[in-house]
Length: 382
Image 1 (tube, rainbow, N blue to C red):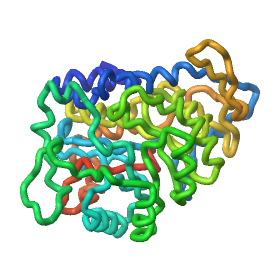
Image 2 (image 1 turned 135 degrees about the horizontal axis):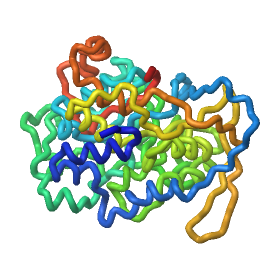
Image 3 (image 1 turned 180 degrees about the horizontal axis):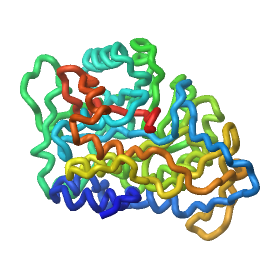
Image 4 (image 1 turned 45 degrees about the vertical axis):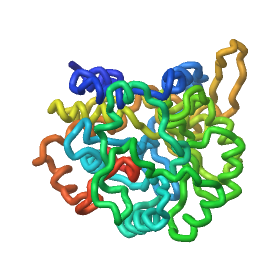
């Protein structure tokens, strides 16, 4: 089977995984309306291409938090990669070369939060991502039916006074009292830029600016938390307008093609993050597939250096046409970006140079737990 787009990776992954694992990866909260709308919302947006532009030099580089990356395509924090591949997040962390951000679900034990943050800061991580939309776990029906909640355990994220692994869904490791004023405590213990993940409204975006954070990830947790909220791409314009360029805005949720990346950038995102597709890539790695040069993105139009991206024609569900003013398009056609998914799925052979160079774990003597998962910014996939 040729794997030439993300849906191919998804189909192949489904063949390799157990039903409970497939359900865990694919599942959404309640009726999964938001999960499905994340993808559908991108298809309601139309491009307005402009031609006769010099596209002899295509440049997909951008900067995030002052650091240059080679393409605006990044790895989102997702949990329990060990369901797909034995060493789980460790394998994902070895795949790309790039910046590393640390994603934290705030624990009720502030001292534990402090220890984790200080540790990753000493290891060279470049930003702290705090996820906001999980004060309680979403109602994921498939996981309940499969009794997955009783079988997943966390061994790392516990108070030092506790020695035994605790079932993931039977513990309460996430603070339910986290409020805006608590952000000042995090700012007092770290020099890392703080990114808030899970904002969907202009009101919260304005509060993020007021509290001096450095970035926002527009996200609805892949539709896994609160169902029937806005699709991420639908919320993006509102959030971008609210921050008025004072902080950077990123997006995750529903990105499946190069055109989806382009649409998110045109509507104001600095980069996008992939969640479920990374797990599909690990599943293909488990199947022993060598996919180093697979063209994962069907078409990722690049832009001439320092050139504009696009102006979009938005087609809302209601049928009326409204214009989203961004800028004119420069579309040279399909541009080959070294595919993130190919790297994730390729490094099953421990003799390959990329894996030999990355044998040392990101966290020495510590496996990556779900609640302190990595955000990996892909800096060089060539």
